[in-house]
Length: 289
Image (tube, rainbow, N blue to C red; front, side):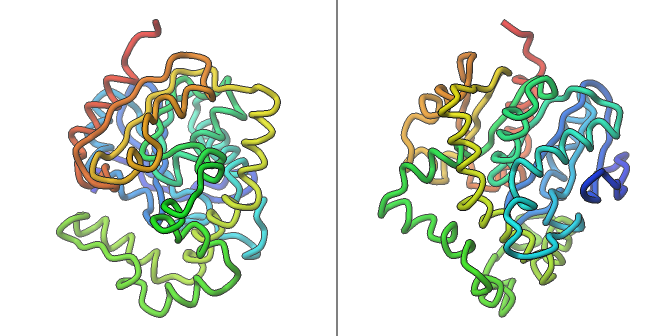
């Protein structure tokens, strides 16, 4: 995986992150979702590295990055804390500003990074995600039936017990679909109790801390200043649950929001890497209007 990329563990002010980076050109930070690690980008990152310096970390709590000191430390697992990591990481690598794309849970950290650090994020791509506050405000029986795991994962202790009883059965995946090395890395993560706890911390913060940060921004009238591009999987349920995704995102963004759907399932970086790379490259290389 990741031919020509450097793999290292970087110590930052608050945490240590496992990071892979390579390529040349403008800096582009890619944030994975749950229950993946940075290796989910292994088919996309080399394509983007032809035009960008691509940086792929394991988010705090995930993969081989630092784990939370306590399962109920929601601030430690908050998207605001992870946003600080993003800025610190890119500064460590020599970049004061950067492009940013986040998938699934990573899209929430990407959103918070652009909101809290507007001078740092040049453009933002949100992949298969909507702001957490919108998701919770629109929660109904259909949402709860489809995304029940949001609420189960936020419970104390029980989800760890359920997942670790048989991680492979719980999460699924295969080397054929994911790629052998990516699957091995992912499987090591889901079998590690500390990593499972760290991943669940992302959901706990997502119910108890992150929505409050979104609400503060909404009430203060703060909006994202950078261009925002929304990409969704047409074979997933985001459109079905939320309808017009660009209209949902627009109140959070000063500039007109752009976006497109990709004909694949949820894990777009693994299922449709070429289409996703084309979509991201076109957005991040596009001159400002």
